Image 1 (tube, rainbow, N blue to C red):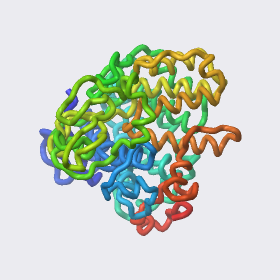
Image 2 (image 1 turned 90 degrees about the vertical axis):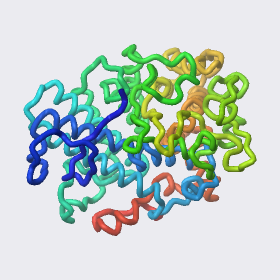
Image 3 (image 1 turned 180 degrees about the horizontal axis):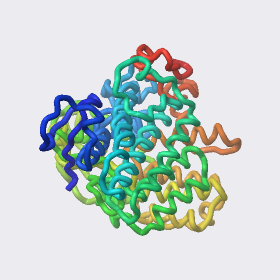
Image 4 (image 1 turned 90 degrees about the horizontal axis):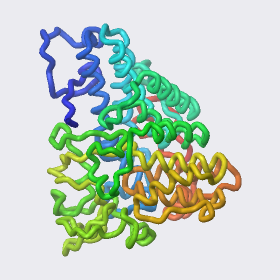
Length: 483
């Protein structure tokens, strides 16, 4: 069900694994490729495939979302710069995320540029355009949070000419305006009523809108968008937190990146996180849970962190992590356990959560609290996540002030979404919240982590630099401050 077979477009510098049964053309160009509905579907599938790349959700978006944070550590040199906040314009993840995101954007731009001219079912064409608009918004949202204003490419790049390839960076405000516009289009074009996380649904659009508005501190809009998801009734929290993993299109899931578990569509990350066995090889792993995180969690009562009563080949299962005992230091200690299927030689079949209901509920609670302080509606959403975890429901008396409620939401986001690539983005958001609104404090922000690692809370490290290769090749691109 989740396997996606792809035809990728040669004129977009992509590689393919399937050939449509058509008379061969002397050459494939946008004008002679986009002829019918099958071509539109193939181009959209290519756009989804970009989410599986190593530089996107196949690996690096998780690495940059966790390794700089207080959630994880590692002795692996491949992620050392991320953990120690020592990234430079030459750092691999800095390059990979930027480049892979633009590959995805280019594929989406081809869909948005050419599919409107195809004669096909109108409703299906609109759905394709809506899904593509969501994907472009998602890529730009990841870019703007990491690099601030980036070049806005809104048409497919079909030439290597400098006049086409080189663009100046847009402002952060312009990028966010494009993201909001794309999501408005996506909401208009996508059909209501679907709860499949395999493809973009209208509620997936609403969930991403909530995250975008929350990042911009537009609390009312964030709450409205999140409530559209919650009140739709299309999703339910899984009765057991442990049953959420591995991600496999479960009732709580709003949007997942799909992996087929083979060489054409396998997931790299589980082999990078798990001890051996079950991981294919023994080496220093990425994203090792920190002692501080484990010790701060309730490993007695919290279903996300307590021992589940099941010892498995990877170790003692604590739902979010395993405790492995091995004479090999590479495989001894705490390891992430949210992706659990056979790593299969770096080709795991596990999926990757991009948006799920508990995340949206916590965004809803946060937005309501930041807008008007603690309320019963905000508390109901917060308590839904707490009680699923086996923790007692709170009363408004327990979190009577806006700061107290904020601290509890921050804590639950950390405990609920640990290792899912959200923590560093949350810490960045908290730092910018404090900068933008006098008197606001969060328990920990990205600037606290930067100070711990670098000895000073250097605000330049709230952003990545642009890759040096991009600076070298694009005379119009101005580097971020401090790099």
